[in-house]
Structures are given as structure tokens and as C-alpha cells.
Image 1 (tube, rainbow, N blue to C red):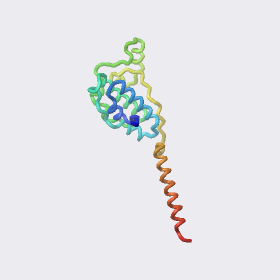
Image 2 (cartoon, helix red, strand yellow):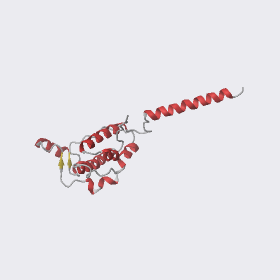
Image 3 (cartoon, rainbow, N blue to C red):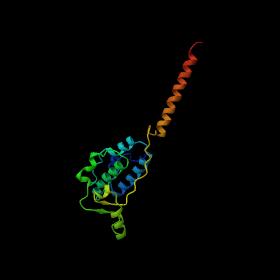
Image 4 (cartoon, one colour):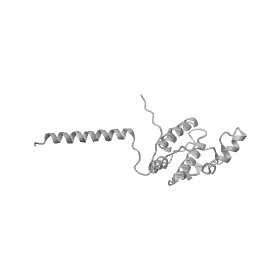
Length: 170
């Protein structure tokens, strides 16, 4: 049985994307992982690696490349992170505007007006909503697998200590 893992970085989103539809699914899965992050360090690690360019992978790959850069810039802006250098590459900007749902005149105007500046500067006009990430101070959350392993080690140390006390003569 093959275990599917959600992408934990934008690099993984791009690497796993073979089509526009696949890109959308990978990005949605990445957003589910984003919600689980609890530290700036974790969020920064998720956006810092340069994703491979998608322009040659599928017809709307240039739009996906610009989308990744705009998305990263928006996350960095909202959560006060350092901007990765790769988001400023010329390949991450569109020459021709792309308006989501351009077939509807009302939606065309809506997307043009409501597009965040990080997207519109790249000629992407969309009504964008980022997932709500609850970053907090202190130590980052540990995964359930990590907690189980730490508990297993703690029990093993306890048993070893108990056994060594039983072996000592009184």
C-alpha cells in the first residue's frame, strides 16, 4: 500500500505538480499542512526553498509559477517573515494579466478590485484567501509520532532505572 503524504513546502507542491489540476490539489493539501504549523521557523522553512519552474511542465505553468511567488510573498508579509530571494525572479511575473473567472464580467471586475497587491503586482487577479495560521511563541508543537517515540524512550529509561535499583544489594 502506498502512503500518500501531503506536501510540506512550496518546493514539494511544485515538484509533485504535473498539471494545473494537480497543482491546485497539491496547493490545497499544502494549505492543510500550513494550518498545522505553530512557529515562524516552521512557516519560514515551508516557503524558503526555491520551487522548480512549472512553465515547461504544463500549459498554465507560468501562471502557477507567478502564483507560488505571490502566495509566498503574501505569507511572508502577513506573518512578518524574511522574503525568499526566489520570489523576485523575472520568471515569477506574468507579462499578460491573468484574471480568474474572466468569462464573467462581474467576477472579472470583482477579482480585479479584490486581488491582494502581492498578486496584482504579478498580473494575477484573484480573490485570494489564505488559511488562518495560528503562530505562537514558545516551543513548536510536536507530531503525534514524535510524542509516542519520546514516551517510549521515557518508559524504557524508567524500566532500566527500576531494574538497576533491583540489582543493587541492600
